[in-house]
Image (cartoon, rainbow, N blue to C red; front, side, top):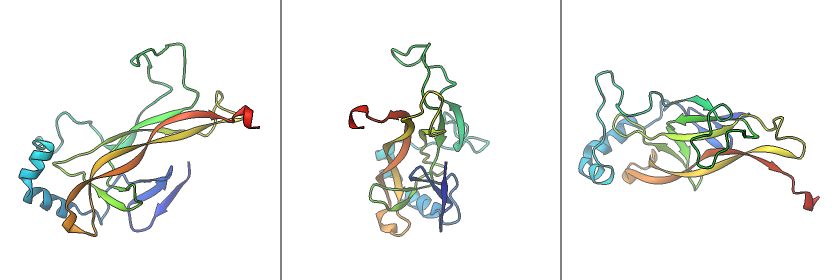
Length: 186
């Protein structure tokens, strides 16, 4: 899969989205933390009590890693947990399921925003990413196609501190499907 480096951000553009697994030097962590600290009552009303780190700096009841590492591939995991899933069927396209905590993303208006991911407020996205364009089962007039889903996340505009923390919409990969040419339109 092709990736393009994005100037000014610790990100690459892949699959038509920003992929920013690290905050980089420009991430407004101090300004986000200050907003949270100055607006504790508002944050509690909106999101409940935020978590405190345990002794080793991690958080209880969270995933062990948010670094974008592949958790498992879809073709390898059991489908028996899905209602009506047949154990003798496999997916036509190979994909990888990842848990990522984005630090930067382009919103629905195309503006780059800092995604709130701090010690007190963490946001993770489960995404499924196509591993190839064609497979043995998805070939010829068919190809594996990446599908996307909108997620509503807490964001911060580093160019306008007055906005504070707000909800915004961001697009992330959701699944990989095998699409075939329509034989009627040939």
